[in-house]
Image (cartoon, rainbow, N blue to C red; front, side):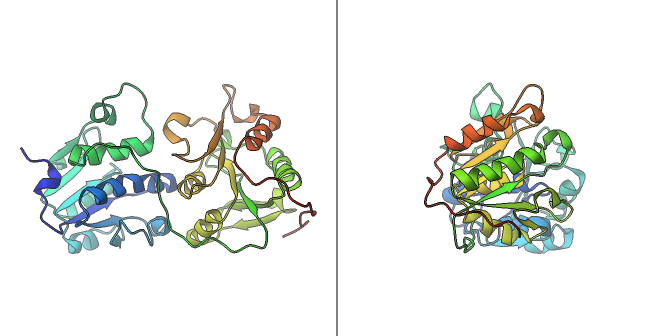
Length: 314
């Protein structure tokens, strides 16, 4: 029996449903690269929420960005629809696409709607261990007929921000307190990179994030995702809690320090970039400042140059 890719017409349209999570969106790009390399003729569309669409904007492997509306995905007429989310809304979008071929992981809810039920990644990859999210998503492409090969780094595309001096981006917020390193430690780390590495410290946060604890540094809160992409693309170093911006930095190949709380680094570590990962059995608050400083000093970041004092305000 021919594999799924061999059954697709030349120039066939493939829709990928990718709802929720900034990090998941970034880590979908290795799977898309594998698909496009195997079948360059395919037209690939992503059905994605507006708030995350910038992740895929300008990506050469993606021909169309679709809003997650039933009418829009149906009007695109994909021959194959791949659901990477698995919830009720994404299942409804998969049905609405009216594709001849509908793929989703067999462990998803509503698995009866798929005529291509993807086994767990461990079975596809032939491993008996936890798999990284990038491996999990890429394994779907292998199941559909992409020849198994090394899974590439995530890739994003943006013009790096123009700054007058090298800088580091710090993301001190997270979705829950037990995933958030103390603000005083982030401030001390910012002082360390400014004084020892001569890197200007820039703190970023979302629209609802309070960055007043960092107001003696440059802060950017609630900026459009396209702007954050450009800012991170031009950085010399990224430091943050386990979060979507850390995956953006990894996709641009920026050296990354990530502090983990209750999430699993084996599943969510920065994918294929120079990185340091810190966690502690007693929780994120038990990660010491000295550990973080040592980790940064071991990353390939710029060496100190002629020192000048950092700006004292935004």
